[in-house]
Length: 154
Image (cartoon, rainbow, N blue to C red):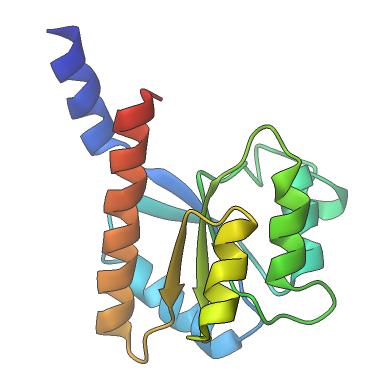
């Protein structure tokens, strides 16, 4: 029954999360909501796409992977200063190892959604307006990540 044991192990796995969002309010709501999702743990929070790329690349202040582990899941805002979420997605396209990418944006514009998927986003979620809805969105992403990992046998 090794397959059953693997599924049980995956069901109990905790996924590391990097949040890239320029809004202090959204980062606070995210942190509060994440407390309600025991299968996910915030390992990093950055304020723009330039910091997100530095974190993912393990550059500059993020070079210590013990302190700044590579995330299993990236929650990525699209509209950020300096380097946008779209630019982060473009940078990630050429990387062999990528986190599960959840675009987490205030934009419901279909063009933004299509572009994000074309650039490699795994899922697209519109930011909720309160912490209860945040928790529901995070739980749904957790289920998507867990489902994908069972399918690919990670």
